[in-house]
Length: 437
Image 1 (cartoon, rainbow, N blue to C red):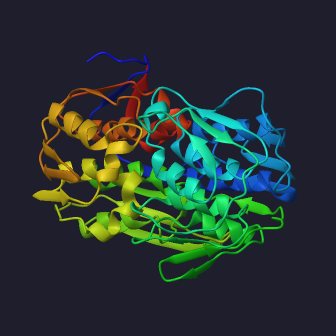
Image 2: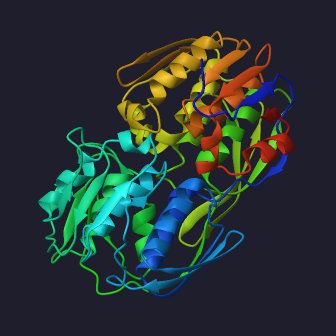
């Protein structure tokens, strides 16, 4: 295969995962803290902000709209401009590869007085946007996109938004968060009904900014806001990034690792449940609450895994971790079945197809179905796979390379920087035999 991006990973077999690891800050929480801090009154400080390309795209977008943001390492200081203090830009807002940025920003900008245009990189320009545009239009927003339902998105300012009651047709925290942000600017309450629980970082974050939402079962209601109040946020380590080392430690003999200060929000930690159902040796230590989010140190030791039928109830709250889980399934005894995960087809890549192709290329019996995957446990061969520019695909196959029979080459890996800057260095320190070129 040829790669559109020259950055390549090469992983040699062997090694074990050990020691104490601190992965970067949670991407979802970093995005939301930046967005709410920008439209709050007064100063917001964010400690542990993820300095990845996706979250930096959000940061640059608000700087483009005249928000004063100061960065010192992973400490961010934001001088909030208030709900209506953002300024119009003289060019489109480029959100790079970040689906979270573009979908949440569409909701936030729908309530502004000025027009906006949102664009992104080649991958983002193909991501579906009608799922957020349609309900925002029902609220009174004026938004257009391409006939295919993709970027660029044109948002006309000065609209009077009305609250709606909306039942989400897909389990999507991005869609829910988009509507909650738009609801801040509506004339009356907005209710979002989710059939399946999705990550609740936006709800928790709004409470931190002194505008709590109400939850009644699967109904989340947000009232119009008069102001948000700046605050201090301490971002935990990202469980989606920790997932690769959780799997690596589970499948590499003699591994014993502690991942420090990882967010274990109950709407995010289903990957841990899935791995434990497969027989992984995972324990949570030093549990605590940090800026409204539950965190813990995660200890993982090597264990023999067994294939399972993954409960569909866990799928929406483990959606980003499935590339790593598929590698675990490939090393497990027996068959692993996943259904109810059609959302994986509209991520940075079609992750079901990308993982099927990569697993098959490395000798694993993997069959992608319409909404999931069936994997027979086996042994990884060496070989070459293409990550298709998808950060999670690249890191998943880096883990697979540790237990392959020969070196594994992974093409098109530059976008790992979107979520996990410094991955190579941390992986090497943890015990992975990996190089990039």
